[in-house]
Image (tube, rainbow, N blue to C red; front, side, top):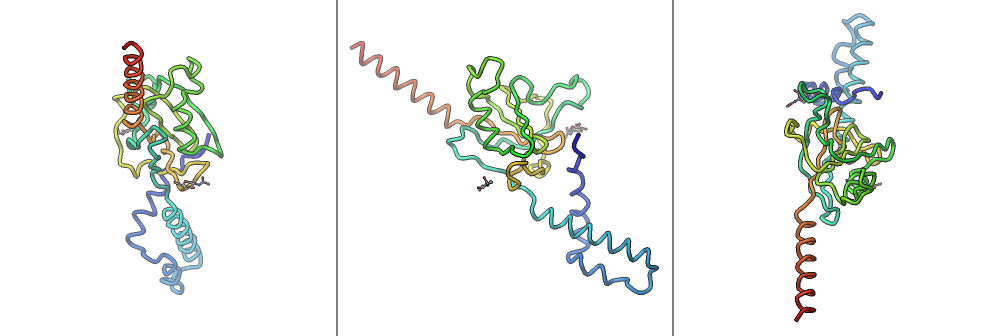
Length: 203
Ligand SMILES: *[C@@H]1O[C@H](CO)[C@@H](O)[C@H](O)[C@H]1NC(C)=O
Ligand SMILES: *[C@@H]1O[C@H](CO)[C@@H](O)[C@H](O)[C@H]1NC(C)=O
């Protein structure tokens, strides 16, 4: 199991208001305090500085091109640990892909678009929803559980393993994409074209 790192960044966020320039802290109490306390202070300042650096590199929401077939839908809560869900996932009726070290949003959208790994051998085609969780997991489903609460975008703050500039959900949180209207429109106009050709052939 991976350590739950998603909570760590909350601390520097709150402290950063008090300490706009963390390195200065090292020189605030250098003389009167005992050596141990000074060392602790230094250690703390280093931790804070490192954490602020990490926050600056926080991943952002990837907005896929329309050719991907998906649009960003939001950050949603995983449902496995909610009471009365019997451990059922927010996206539970599809398939999934786990790719430590290489997961990206594009990889997940491609996977859910083709329906690869689906019990029907991908015959059902794209899934309505694609969700990234825990930096390296991709979940596809036709439905998003109504028990899954929408969270602020910033709650999905884990960088994707395969591209750290992109957000890949969080611990028990999903960066969710929904099949876009563009694809539905393409399917609709393709359908009209087929219908038109058929009518033309009949005439
Ligand atoms: C999100 O899920 C967790 C359990 O994983 C739960 O404790 C929390 O209350 C949920 N948050 C919301 C806003 O529903
Ligand atoms: C990572 O994602 C960003 C968009 O979020 C993209 O511009 C960049 O090219 C990607 N990097 C790689 C190595 O694919």
